[in-house]
Amino acid sequence: MSRVYNFSAGPAVLPEEVLKEAAEEMLDYRGCGMSVMEMSHRSKMFEQIIGEAEADIRDLMGIPDNYKVLFLQGGASLQFAMIPMNLFKNRVGDYIITGQWAKKAYQEASKYGKANAIASSADKTFSYIPDCSDLPVSPDADYVYICENNTIYGTKFKTLPNTKGKTLVADVSSCFLSEPVDVEKYGMIYGGVQKNIGPAGTVIAIIREDLITEDVLPGTPTMMQYKTHVDAGSMYNTPPCYGIYMCGKVFKWLKAKGGLEAMKAHNEKKAAVLYDFLDQSRLFKGTVVKEDRSLMNVPFVTGDEELDALFVKEAKAAGLENLKGHRTVGGMRASIYNAMPIAGVEKLVDFMSDFEAKHK
Image (cartoon, rainbow, N blue to C red; front, side):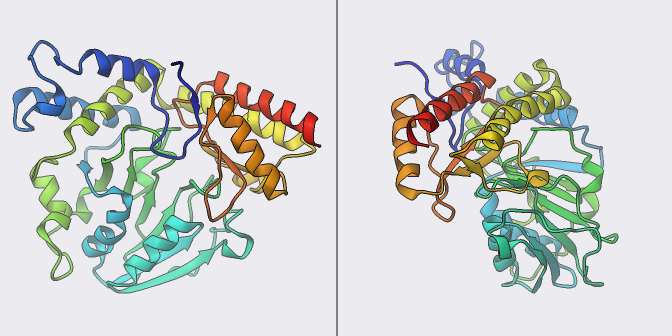
């Protein structure tokens, strides 16, 4: 069977070269006679895998020495609780609500202290990013929280919020490694890897050293303390070994492609193919204001639910998979992460063009 073009929001498309390399190593990793799936996380060989993975992501993102890199489990959703448990000193967190995941993080934080929604785009179904140049940041806020790229709604912060000196915490799950990033602008950047980097089951957290202390909320489980994982080099318990191995391969793939500058150029070119079509289409329309459009997730609609359903069905038959929009939005969504080739987006646009000719 031939490969389809997979537009899933996550778990999502992975680079074919990486999958082939992993397949070749599945039964015997570099002559050790076993798979990475079977390997002890305490072995020299796995120590090398995780060590190289950390070195490569540090190199790709230019992560300064005073930031720790952690490979964790539990998805981004577990971080919604870990962040307040570890970072609440005044028990105040300011949240910018730009979609479902920021809202869930906000709701979770409110179990542990005072979570303030200091800006929101809920009034227009999260179709834009609110102006964050002069926010009512709480004087005693421990941090300001954003979800930088909104997978469901297809919006992206192009300018980081003015946090008025407060620590910025960002969930970057769906834009991780899609473009260069200035790590020092954040106290913490984290994301689930299953959208842009690897298989589901691994979270990467990049945290500034001064935020990692034993001074956590009373009752915080040992496993939920960042310091536990920092002190153990992400190996306090058995880490998601195979996921880390796959992420490491993707980091090497990214470096071979020219790093994050090259990836941003590739992603801009690819997204332009789809957005340019949407902007001139008489049947399909994008749902996000132009200046806040994501390069990773592109939602669009025809305005007719039955036609949307027909489009998704016929697209699937044409080898264009997972184009159904999130249940909270409807319509369609094309997730065009790093590993989606331009050819996939071009095939989608050709299909949309033919569909429009038949149905407009």
